[in-house]
Structure formats: C-alpha cells, structure tokens
Image (cartoon, rainbow, N blue to C red):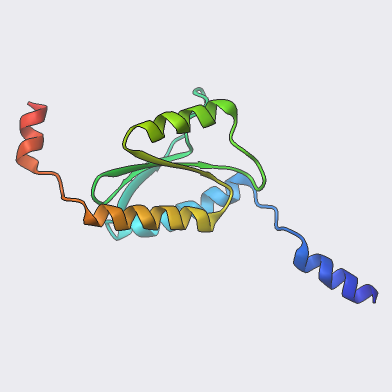
Amino acid sequence: STRLKKAKSKTTKKKIISEAALTREVSKFLNNLEDKGLLWYWKVSDRYTSGIPDIAGTVIGGLSFYIELKAKGKKSRKLQAYTQYKINKVPGAVISTDDLDEVKNFIRSLIRRGKRLKKPRVKELKEFLS
C-alpha cells in the first residue's frame, strides 16, 4: 500500500524545469533546424532592456519569430505581454511558453507557412534599399 502511494505520487508529480534548462533544449532544437538552412535565430541577451523576448529569428520564407521562455508555471510579466502584443500587430509571430513541445510545434508551423511563401526578389530588394 505504501509502495503503491509512492509510485503513484512519482508518476503524477510534474517535472519542474528551469528557464535555463528549457533554453538549452530549445537551442538544441533550433540549432538543428539552422544547420538544415530552415531558419536563423539568436538568443537575445539584453539585461538592460525589459520585455524583450528571449529568442528572435527568421524562418525560411522570411517570417520572423520571437520566443519568450518561462520557467514551468510562470507567466509573462506585463511589459513582456505588451511587447508580445506589439509584435503580433505587425507581421511577426510570438509565443510565450514553458513547454519544449509547444516551441517545436510553433516553429514547425512557421516553417511550413514559410515554404509556401514566395521568396523575395533580389532585384526588387536592391532597388528598395538604394
């Protein structure tokens, strides 16, 4: 009876994951996709500006994305939520999560959308920039 209770509590107990551990796992996933040429990203490390997402990048097709990683059970602060709102107003995708699978699904869906988009025309870009 005691053994059964202990075993039961182990299986129902949620695994606590820190933001740093989640960041390492997300970076491994994104590095793999970057090596395949499906996206480019960087870990934003600005300690002096609040509200900026932890990771920013672009997937194939030119879609930009932003990821705010949270420790298990934590929510975005007000300034972070406001920044996410502003990103969503322009053609950008943002997610705030404490779940690696959610990040994977988010990025995979963006890659699928990006592959369907036309690639920007280099000539038009050069004219625009000149």
